Image (cartoon, rainbow, N blue to C red; front, side, top):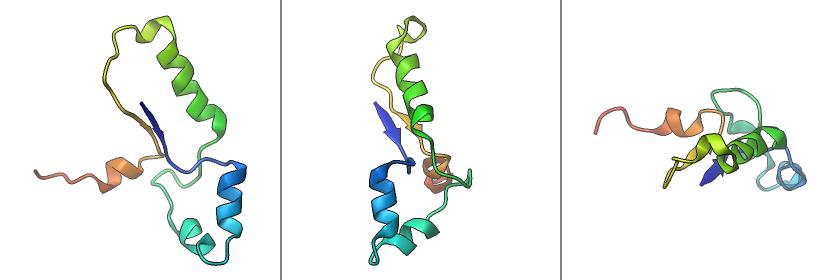
Amino acid sequence: AVAPGAVETPLLQAGLADPRYGQAIRDFVAPIPRRARPDEVAAMIVYLMGPDAGYIHGAQFLVDGGIDAAARPTVF
């Protein structure tokens, strides 16, 4: 599965323009301080559909600018 974070799309732009949620969306910044471009998410999908990914099975790929890694606990 591919799990994207915030991606520069019309849906995100609508959220940013929303008076209720726009500021919260702007304030939630990934460790890589920008939002993904659609082609960056597509590149992961293209790779996973290609011959070099033939042995990948049952994995989740986070294309989120480091949000999951920053939020993940370091002690279990």
